Length: 318
Image 1 (cartoon, one colour):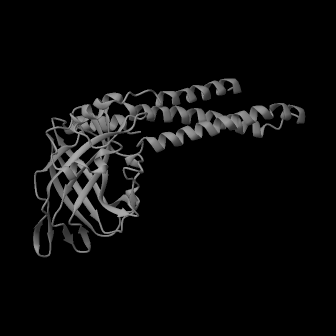
Image 2 (tube, helix red, strand yellow):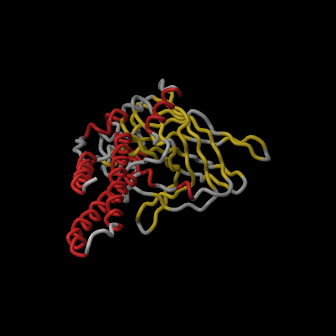
Image 3 (cartoon, one colour):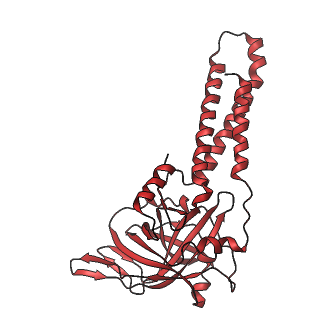
């Protein structure tokens, strides 16, 4: 394959990056529009509280994509598993303190129109110890959904509940305080995850072609010194294109959860199946959220059946 054709392929891949950065108009109605998809939806969760001392996870003043939280490599030792059912209501949260939770507000200042809605627990999670079955008291909280990255059309989906008495099993403790849940979601019709996987495949295909031609130039011993000198700028250009393609692949992997499991959410949404459970701490006048475990979405009771979820997962997985 000629260098000219490879160069055109590389440029076409570079043009795809423009699609990633396409304009996505975010106005005051955007968060309200997506949060309306969760109203009055019931959800089954499973919390896993871990024994390990937690690291800091991204906060409202240090936002990163939620799927960058590498909690899977931290979870070790004993665990406390808690099945939890909740309802994302359509009612506005009326508690002043809850309405001022920075994690839910994101970069928005609290206003009369802030889309922070009430979250109701539907059960008291239970677990078994040597003393028998234990129940965990949980009281209402709130939830919100804020745009995280307009270019990737990712939304932060965050909520909290209060566990006033906490829970302990062996050497694992759920603190007696407010507990925060962090995940991400997308509007399924935007098809951003599938697009990102397609872009990555095309980038990698072009990168393979570039690497082939670079190796051919390096191994060609049939030409003399003059010809090698003449081809040197061509070789340098190929190396530049390879760096660009490599950078684009890295950008895609950083900005999209291409290797993480996804599941269908309510009313045409798409969720990361797993998220982070954290508690809030103050350090040097700044808020930090400390990882204490993970949670998984098990089911949304809005008519999304298991067959559809499996079809969506198969379509989106590599």
